[in-house]
Length: 367
Image (cartoon, rainbow, N blue to C red; front, side, top):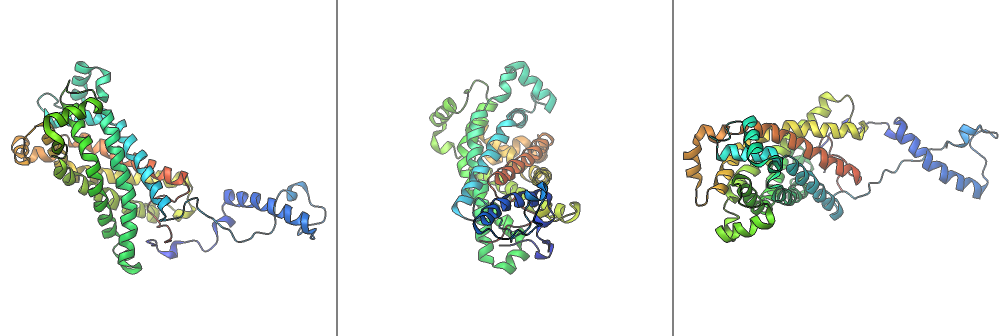
C-alpha cells in the first residue's frame, strides 16, 4: 500500500549517484565479472593494458536488485516490528522510572510532593538513590508486553485497513487509517499492560509495600483478587488509546512534513542516520501532544490504583477538574516527549538493523 506520492521518487536510480551504494555495487560486480571473464576468456571491455585502479573496478553496470532481508508484510516482518516494540517501550519506560516515580507521587500526595525538584529531594532523603528505581521490574515487563502489542498490531492493522479501503481511499484518508490502526492496537496492548501497571503504581506510591513484581504481584492478588489487577483497565484505555492515536498519527504526519519541507531531498536519498534523526524529532514533538491529550486519564489511573475501592467520581472530587488536567503535567510533558522520541528512534533503528525501512515519510511498497 503506497501512501507516498510517486512523483517524489527520483527518476535516476540512486546507485548511480550515491557514492557508497556505487562502490558497494562495483565491489560485488567485480567478483562476478572476474569469474565470468576467466571462464569465457572474453575480450575485456576496457583497454588491453588496464591500470591497477581499473583492474579493481568494474565497467558494466547491470540493473540493481535491492532485496530486503525481511519481506514486507510477511509474518517475519510483523515479528520484527513486535520485537522492535519490546525494545522500544520496555527499555525507555524503565529508563525514566525516577521521573515516573516522582510524577505518580505528585498525583497521589501533592501536599508532600509539591514539585519536581522537591519530589526528588523527598525521595532521596527518605529512600536514598536506590529508591529512585523502585518499581522498575513491573515497568520493564509491563511496557515490554505493551510495546510488543502496540507496534506489532499497529503495523498489522494499518496494512489491513489500507487493503480494506483500497488504494485511492487509503491514500486520501491515510490519517484516519493511522488513527484506527493505532486505536485497535492499543486496545489489545493495554490488556497486556494493565496488571503490571496496577502493581507498579502500588509499589511506587506505598513505601514498604513490596520490592518489585515478584513479591508485589502475589500481595496485590491476595488483597484485591485477580479482578483487581484490571480495575484500572477502563481508565487505562481512556489514557492510552487517545495517547497512542496521537502518538502514531501525529508522528506519521510530522515526519511527512519534515521530509516535505525541512529535508532538501526525498527520504530514499537520505542517509539512515538522518532518517533516524527525523524519527526522533518527530517522536519528540508527537510525545508533547500525547502527554496533553492523555494526562487527565493518567491522573485517574494513578488515583484508582492507589486507593482500593475508589471510583472515578471520587478522583474528580479529590483532585478537582483543574487538578485532573494539570497536576503533574509539566513533568509528564518532559517525560513523555523524551520517551516518545526515544521510542521511535529505537524502533526505527531496530527496523533498519533487520533491513526494513524507517516509519513514515514514504510508505514501503505493497507486497
